[in-house]
Each structure stands twice: as C-alpha cells, then as structure tokens.
Image 1 (tube, rainbow, N blue to C red):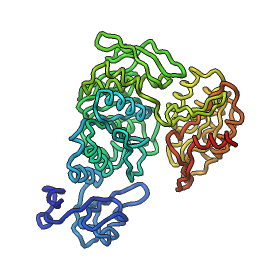
Image 2: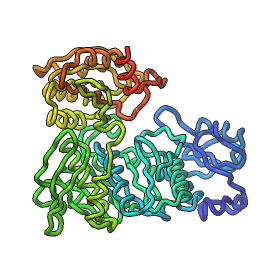
Image 3: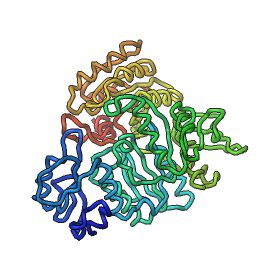
Image 4: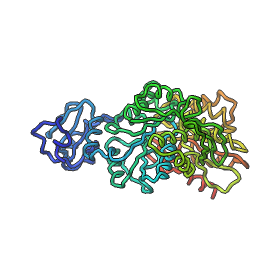
Length: 478
C-alpha cells in the first residue's frame, strides 16, 4: 500500500509513493517499510523508541511530540486515534463487511456475547466472537498477540476483523470495554447493535470517578445504529433516555419492552417468561442465577434488533451452554460442588454468591482475593459482601502483580471485619484451594472467585501457570 492511500490528504505529496508494508506500535516488531506509531502508554512512551524503529527499517513514523529521526514523520494530535484510522484503511475496513454487535457493561459481557452467538448460529449465520475468553469464528480459535484482556488494541482488532472476513463471518459479536472506548480502540468501527448490561464499581484506578466510567460506556451508543439496555440498571435508564439510536429496554421493570417475569432458578439453570409486543414467551437458559435472566434478555434484545424472530431466539438460548469461568462447575466426583467464576468486582461477587445460595443445600464457601495495581477502593467492599453472604470465606491472592499480597488482604479484611462472617486468610492461592477442598462437607458449594477463565497468576510482572481446574484435580488426586 502506498503512503498516499494510507494517509490520504493528510500526507505531504513528496512522500506519497512510499511503499508501506505494515503498521506497528512496538519498535521491536518493526520490519522494513513499516509505519511506526508512537503511543503514550501507562508505563512507557513510544516516542522514546522512534530511533530504534528507524534503525529497524521504519519508513514513516507517526508521533504526537517532536522527535529527531531521519525518516518522514507525520505529527498528529492523537496517535491512538491515528493508528485506529490507519488500521481500518490498511485492512480495507473489514468491519463494514459483516454485521457488528458490541456488548459493554461491568459484568455479564462475556456470557451475553456467547448467548448472542448461540442465537445467531441457530438463525443459520456464521458468527465470530471477540472477548475476554477467546477470539473465535465458528469453532476456530484465532490466536492474537494482544495483551489487552477484553477488547484488543485498534491494530489487533482490525487484524482480527480481517480474519473474520476471510472466515466468511456474517456477524461478529464483541465485548467492548470502557478502556477500549476511552482509548480509541474501536474508533473507526460502526456497530449495528450496541448492548449495555450494567454499571457497577470497577476500573476507578483508570477512570477515577464513576461519572467518567459511565461516560466511557455511553460512547458505544454514539457509534451504534440500534441499542439494547438493561433498563433495571439506573445507568441503563440514562442511556435509554439520551441515546440517539433506537433502544430496546430489557429487564424486569414494568416499563421494559422486553420484560422477564415468573423467574424460577435451580442448580440446572433458569426458567422464566418474557413479555414482548403483547405476547408471552417461555424461556430456559442452562446458567443459574438471577443475573442470567438479565444477560438473556439483553441477548434477546440484540437478536431482535438484528431482525431474528422470537422462536429462533428462544431455541438459541436453550442451546447455549455455560461459558468457561462463568458459574463453571468443576467435575470432582465428590459430595460437594466446586464452582469457578470470574467475579472480581463487588457486584460480580455478590451476584455469584446470591446465585449459589438460591440452590445450595449446604454451606456456601467463598474463596477470593483482589487484583493488585487495580482499583483498591473495592477491596473492603468485596470483603464485606463475602462476610455478609457467605457461610465461610477464604481470603487469598488473586493477581497481586507488583503489590504485596498481604497488603491487599489487609484491605479486604477491613470490610469483612464489619460483618459477623467467619473467615480465614491463606495468602497462597494453591494452599487456599487445598484448604477449601479438605474442609468441605456434604452438599457444600465452594466458589473459587476472581480467576474465571484465566490459566495463570500474575506475581510481580511475571505470569505463572495457574489453572484452578488443574489445581482442584491435583489436590483431589493427592
């Protein structure tokens, strides 16, 4: 691709014939003819590596600040936005070649995307999914180099979209994080449907205030043709009232256009009825918990906005299986139950404990921690929730990262000490899991909260293999 094609009118005429072979924001990955984009990150600044990029063969450098290099430089106000625009152009705007659904919210994004996927596949369309657990098209898992856990960076995202086009995807469903919306990762994308699940306390280390966090989420509806919101959530109400696009209100509220009622929860899942356009439809989903109802009606709303009929939607929900790390039952062949769940926010932890209490015949034992180098204000809140709702809690490490695990635990204990809840502290997560298994009694349910689909633990700046399923099996074998 020529520079004139990639940069258009934004580039000087004398550089129009430069042959561009690729785009990168990592100077170590630069190949001859690449464009290097200087990104200001949290830990370092890409401008510091401009000369290294030149040495490795960069043909053009995009920067916000003045740099001293011997190759052409295009100066921009926002390099994140610039790399998103270039990536869209370089990969020939792939997201315009399929229908695109984005799901945002604090909790429920992953499960909702997989419910939508099941419905779309039941409707006979080939679908791709981009999100926390994995990126897939059909049954094929797509491997990316992205270090972002939910929504890939703009460059990787467009690469994934291009693979989706090659894989003949007719629709792509993706999780859209608040970071992605704030940091321009989805700039240049236009969504057929935007979905909002809920807004609870999280990511304040990045957004600083709940108002900023909410504003980031609302950006999805500025770039969507149609929308669906959980109308029981106050933030969902605000989005519905202010969005320029057509929005379906989903939930249990009487004002919802897609209203769930007659909810019956068991260990096998949830049965409920949905009122829509003067008709009532029976729905079943094989994921227990009241929160599953909200995820389901949001998925139903998205499918309706895509023009899928209600009978197909209900069949798609019935076919949907559980998602790895979301109320995932670990087969143990014991007289107690072990559940793995990604709950790592106050609302997420409360949801999973309440969901389990609805069907548990014995004690509910909650094992959890909080991530290091992340929002510390939620730690005592999560401690208090566990103490109030669990029969017994085990406070341990999650991903401590560069923080002292014992300091994190101390902050969790501030909250749990405000309750009468019984608990113990075992900082080593492997030992904590062993303790939970050794002390479980008949009909108890052990919740391993926080790690979910993750198969690693981050201690310092290193990732170590740590799959809770494997840890459970190993301990039971011993």
